[in-house]
Length: 164
Image (cartoon, rainbow, N blue to C red; front, side, top):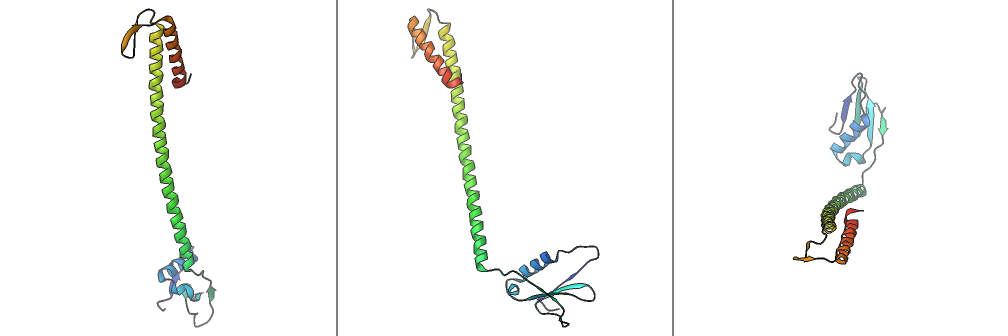
């Protein structure tokens, strides 16, 4: 056998995927053999042989191979670049989603704090009566109108922050 020939012994009971084996051999040998004609035959001993030259007996099956061209590799490179860009875009999207989620979580926490503060303030105003109320750092007595106005404001804050 010459250096361009490959032999495969078929094993009893084993189903060999000859096309895959041929493709692997041709890829290993490089692009030059892909341009030459390839022949396949089985000798008397059951050995399957692939070669660029037909056997001396001349009885062989011609194997059709697909040619690879530089445009095919360009196409593969284009596909690879597109895939890389998609992966980069996906990573950016995940990072943006993460940042948006963190922002939403922070806003939710602030709303919960504002809700609790508004409820606490409303509870104080409802139970205040005629006692002193600390407002803007000063203690003072509120008129009933002021107290009602502040209670209304706190109820609006509760609606805005507590979802009620």
